[in-house]
Structures are given as C-alpha cells and as structure tokens.
Amino acid sequence: MKKSLILLALAGGAVAGAKVAQWRRLSKLAGMSVVVTGGSRGLGLALARCAVAHGARVAICARDPQEVAEARELLLREYPGAMVLAATCDVTDRSESERFVSAAVEQFGTLDILINCAGVIQVGPWQSMGTEDYREAIETHVWGPLNMILAAHPALRRRRGRIVNIASIGGKIGVPHLLPYTTSKFALVGLSEGLAAELDQQGITVTTVCPGLMRTGSPRNAWFRGQHRQEYAWFSIGASLPGLTVGASSAARRILAASLARRRHLVFPLPARLAAIGRELAPGWTARISAAVNARLPSSTEADGPRRRGSESTSPWSPSPLTYLNDRAANVHNQVPPS
Image 1 (cartoon, helix red, strand yellow):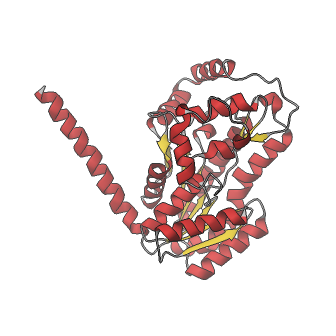
Image 2 (cartoon, rainbow, N blue to C red; image 1 turned 90 degrees about the vertical axis):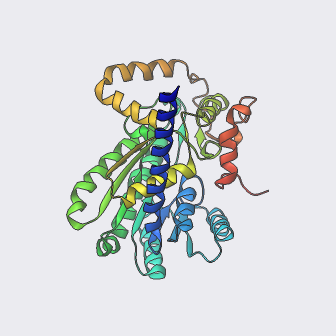
Image 3 (cartoon, rainbow, N blue to C red; image 1 turned 180 degrees about the horizontal axis):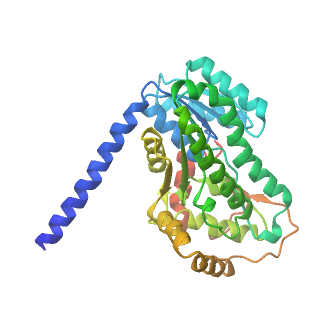
C-alpha cells in the first residue's frame, strides 16, 4: 500500500513537473510573431488561441471570410488588446499565400513561427473517391504548406525561425476509408522531413507533427462519401473516445512547446505513438489489423452519390452521447456556425 502511494506521488510529481516545464517554454511566445493557416476553427484556432494567450502576435487565415472574421472576434473577445491579423487566403494559391505572409510581416515586422494547419478531410471507401478528392487533399496538404514556406522563408531565415507542419498519424499508417487524406499526409511528412534536413544549416527548425485522434469538432465539417450517415457515425464516435483522443487545446500546447524546443518530430497521444512504433516493427501485422478494421466499416453502396458534409449526415448514432466530447469541442473551436 505504501509503495503504491509512493509511486502515485512520484507519477503526480512527474506530471506536474512536465506541466511547469511546458508553461515555461510557452512563455517564450511573448512578443513572437506567429502565422497559422487554417486558423479559423478546429486545431488551427486552438493553436492561435494558445499563442495569443501567451503574448504572441498572431496572423490567421482561412478561405471563408466570414469564418476567419468570427475567429478574430472570438480571440479578441477572450484576449482584449491582443494583436490578431485575420485574412482570407487560399493556401493552394501561391499569390494569395505570398500576400498573406507579406501582410503579416508588414503588420508585425517579423515572423518567428509558421504553422501549416489548413486541412481537408474526406471519408469513405476508396471506390467512392474520385480523382478530384485526391487532388484537393494534395493541393491542400502539400502544395499549401509548400506555398506558405516559400513565401515565409526570407522572413523566417532572418529570425532563425520555426516551421510547424501538421501532418497526421495517417501520414505514417495507411488508414482505411481515409485514402486521399493519408496519401497527402504521407507526402507532407516526406516534404517536412526533407526540408528539416535542408533548412537546418540556415537555423530554421522544421517540426513534423503527426497527431492521432483529436477532439477538435472537425467531423461536422469533413466530407463523406458512400454511406455517408454510417461513415459520419463511426468517424465522429471514434474522434470522441476518451483515452484514445486528445483535446485540441492540449494538443495545441504540446505542438507549440515542441516547436519552441526545436524538436524535429512529434507523435501523440500515446495510442498514436504505439501505432507508429508498431508500423515500424511489424508492418505486416499492422496491415492485417488495418484490413480487419476495414472489413467492419461501411461498404460502398452509394459510390455515385454526391459527397456530403458531416453536418448533413446526422443519424441516431451521431450526434448522441457517444459523440458528446467532440460535439462540445465543436462549440469551443468555432466548428458550429453561429445561430
């Protein structure tokens, strides 16, 4: 009994120590200039919120002008007096990316951290996916970050800055029913890790982030094909499971702390790390597990139907108590249009 209490106290102390170390690292954000693509909702908004909370000047962008304006108002309401630039920008367009970066540098004078977080998710069996789905994913997850990096490179080089590329555990393990997404994230991991090697001599650190399931509220804004209601149900339930998922705010703190520490790679939470290790050590078994999971996912009986948003794919299973955590996150992270 006494040993158990000692171990529990040691574990608690370790956790508390890690939290203090993280807070001290995040305090270095004060006065820094941070650019976040896809910063109007979800993880991008959580990253912007964390940076603003610790005194950074933040520029966010998204394709929807109303959405990005709402995100700016939200940040200023929570942190009066903060410096927040909000712009409409399609990162797949090179000229728009350059204009956004130029506006941020002009307003803040410097650029310390670029976070590539803009993303798109398409869910459904491979038979229901068209080439346009792959093209959209690759343009968003590969060309988008590359456009932003090319635009931001001169400013980052002057500051020996940092680049954060938000990939996914789907960039390390092929995930069934997410094929365009995983294809593009695998490519992003390759781009990010290659850049990390080349930009190191210029003093620029590139952090490749491969998170697992996060409670960002994103399912309702994802795209679904095939049996879209069933696809939305399993996807939104999976993104809500406690123990297997991590909250967006917690994820944001970990990502920013890793960038400030100039870490090259970050995989979290623990289930994602274990899955990545398993893929490296036993790729055959990992493939078998993925095939077994795929066999239990909805079949493709509506391959020719149009794709639908998650918000158009509700059912008795979702929203439900099983999706409560992600539904709550959707309200916190601007995933739900204001009534």
